[in-house]
Image (cartoon, rainbow, N blue to C red; front, side, top):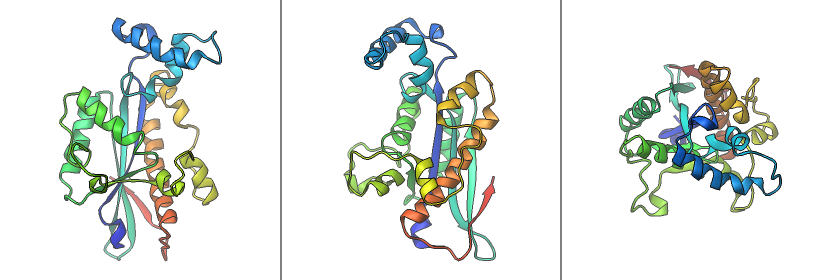
Length: 238
């Protein structure tokens, strides 16, 4: 096993608006959403709070929820070959899937590091916020309270690509394209997840997409760290 890969858990989350439509929101949350939506109306006053809710609510942990978490970890098989072992936690009950995810990571050793694309600004804080909303105590690897920056075991492929340029955002799909990594976007992308969940009601489709994103993420990490494998790694879904 390549030492740098030994304790990394690659992850990706998929989020949706917390309710099927805007009218179903709690009245207090409607007021709060209206305030947030006002910032998005500056270029187009004709847009309604409901239209913006469908487009953007899932991005915010206060108005969205997690429906899938996919993870991947490199292992060596009996032949000494590198294998990415993947697993998805998905479901309509967010508290159950978050609890299952927490149980999994707490069984891993204390040197565990989490890796996601734009994870420091999206995946990791979103996970923390939704855990707290659901009354779940944060696992140590996600609990940043009192930690120095060098004590936080979080890796971010977008940060690796920035090289200190904090104004630069690059999507996972764009980086996959320039590094010639097969795309995970097979009939779905992040902007369509809310529709696929609430309208198509196709959670398995979201799960498959989330798992593919983890494979792309792991492949990108190898590229960004200059790790060259003699043979492409295999993927094993559990």
